Image (cartoon, rainbow, N blue to C red):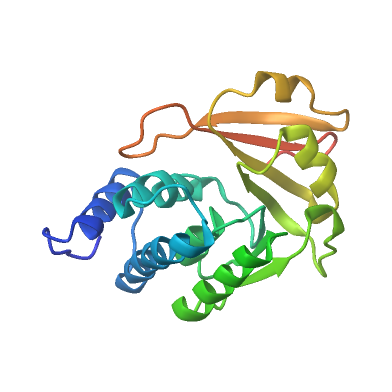
Length: 220
């Protein structure tokens, strides 16, 4: 069950409605963390230009709910959000999956400083921010899935992130429209598993989740 919210609180009300539409249950602490994240993102974007979206209500729909739409597709314990930027989709997913571990990887120092602030203020013990390029980052343990949202084209993602994934892991790439040209250029050794349509509450337009894994690996 969702916690009761004050209907006059527009942001909280919109978030409650969106979570209900996505059929996601949330505890009170998680709800407050999601609201606090939106507040920090709105505040820091004024200086750090983390997002072009300035309206907090649009931040809820276009960033928060958009990120949470892939939650049912996560399988495993360790995930890396490559090109995390302002923490999307990694921060919202980490809030909702406190039992899992998330690495937030970005080459922009200003953005990883923001991620540090979010992790500290929200007391997220299951995340760590890393300031590095994907192709240069060597994790101590590999990941069950590589998550990307507006990071790069699919061939570049696979080339730069292939060393980050476990043998049975997945690449989960969020896209705004059908990327036929990118799909046609997926290199040998990888297989397109599925393209899942994401329905984001309050957001018009196409949103897709592309699932890819290496040939010869067991299907999920």
